[in-house]
Image 1 (cartoon, helix red, strand yellow):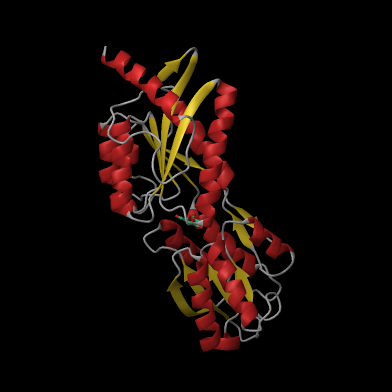
Image 2 (image 1 turned 30 degrees about the vertical axis):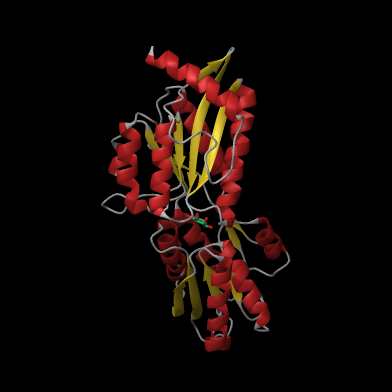
Length: 345
Ligand code: GAL
C-alpha cells in the first residue's frame, strides 16, 4: 500500500515537474515523501539526484552537462524516463550535505555525488546507504587509510561505487611531456629544470597526485629539478593568472616550466605569460590537465606545451551506466577507472 501510494505520488510529482533541471534548486518539492520507481503507462520513471561540488568549474561543467545529456540518450534507448535533478554545492560542504538530505527526502532512486570535501565521505555515504539509495561517487576520490583505493565506505557497501580517473597517471603524463622535449625542459642549459607549480584545491587527491607525480616523472627520467614556487590556485583561472603573474615578475627568466594542476589555471597562466612578454615553446613551457577545447587548440598552435585529456565524457557515461545498473538491481564493481590521455602537438 505504501509503495502504491508512493508510486501514485511519484506520478503526480512527475506530471507536475516535467524533465531534468540543471538548476541550483531541485525541481521537486523538498518536503515531500519518496517518489520511487513510478510507472506512467508502460514507461518507467526514475528520479536521479546529481550533486556537483561547484557549478563554477570548467571541467565539472562539461562533466555535468554530459551526465544530463547521456541520461536522455539512455532514456530514449531504454524506453525509460530518467528525471534528473542537478544541484550546485557552491563549494560548501554544509550546503551539499543539505542537498543530499533533500535528495533523500524526495526519494531519489539513485544519487550521483561529486563531493565538496572527501573528508565528509563517510557521513554522506552512511546516510545515503541508511536511506536505501544507491550512490555513485564521482571525480573526487576518498582514499583509504593506506592512501590507496581501499576506502571502507565504498568496499563495504555493494550499492556504493566510485567512478574516476587515477590522478597519478595525469601527473606522470605532465612530467613526461616536459621530459620528452629535446632539451628536457632545460631551456637555459644550466643542467636543471626550474619550475613553478600551481595547485588545485589541496584537499583534493587530484591536486596532490598531479603535483607529486609530474615532478616524479621528471626525476625518474634522470632530470634535475628546482622548485621556485608552489601555490594553491584552487582550480580557478583568475587565481592561476595571479600566481603566474607574480612569479613571472619575481623569478623572471629563471622560470622554465609552469605546471598547472588543471587547464583552467593554465589558461590564466598563459595570459600572464603573454603579458610578461614571454613565449611558450621558446623561452618557457606550460602544461595543464583536462584538455579543455580551448587548451587543445592552444597546444596545436603552440601557446601551450601540452595537456592531458581528463575524459569528462567517458567518466560521465560510466557514471550514468553504473547508476542505471544500480537502478536495475545489477551487481556493480567498487571502482571504475577511465584513462587519461597525453595531449601534445
Ligand atoms: C579535476 C579537474 C579539475 C577540477 C577538479 C574538481 O579532475 O582536472 O579541473 O574540475 O577535478 O574536483
